[in-house]
Image (cartoon, rainbow over all chains, first blue to last red; front, side, top):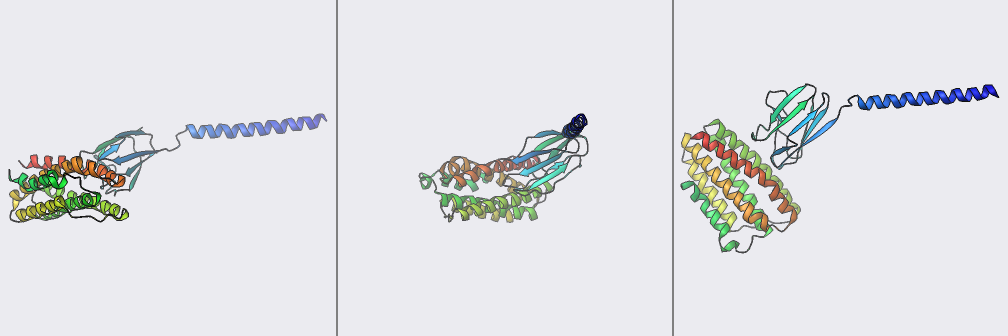
Amino acid sequence: MRSLALMVLAGLLASLTGEGARLRAAAAASSAAKPATVAVAIEGMKFSPASVTVKAGDTVVWTNKDIVAHTVTDKAGSFDSKIIPPGGTFKYVARKKGAFAYLCSLHQPMTGGVKVL
Amino acid sequence: MKKTSLFAAVLFALSTPAFAQSPNDAQIASIVVTANQVDIDAGKLAATKGTDPEVKKFANLMVADHTGVNKQAVTLVTKLKVKPEDNDTSKALKAGGDKNIEKLKGLTGAAFDKAYVDNEVAYHQAVLDAVDKTLIPSASNAELKALLVKVRPAFVAHLEHAKHVQSSLK
């Protein structure tokens, strides 16, 4: 009887520690920068929000909700969407750290920024 | 101020008894499509005949943007089963546009650039006024009204862009 009780106890402990390890691993994964996706709308001849801050590895997705075509063009040349037609999107995986100032190369008063930490 | 005379007819048409009663949706559709087409036609001419790189760039943008707007306008009126209906304003816009093209065809070099851009400033101002004072308030279909509201920021940006090019030419 005693040995059976010990076995049950050992089994319980094993399953508890196994479960605990899985939980700890899951918690660690979610806190350790899982790449995020940040959305920017292009609407009413504006980028909205005009500036976003992301972590390296995150993805920024611009969606053109306007009636005319636009571009997302980094002034320093790190990225350029080329023409994004109405309803189109542009995805940029922000691997390079730093502050990027971009504009719509067609409608130059339209500007925005991406800060990559 | 010759440049304003081209659009005096348009502004007149928008403020005369023809529109003492507001334009209906079929008339608004015609005004929108005609207004865009007029600017596409002038833009196509300036894209080839213009000299200044900024003028040519602006002209190409006008062709692209107004073609985009018209595509969406035509898609919407087709969906709504609205048949664009000619009216005094759309006719005045067309006549003003034709007159502008004729005038531009007789010019070259810097004179062409200046005349084109001056007209673009006056044109976008006139169309914006029409959108704000007549077209948006008169549109009865919610989707048509929404399209006009959505188009407005592009026209504002074009006006600012045209003014910027205009000042750079002086």
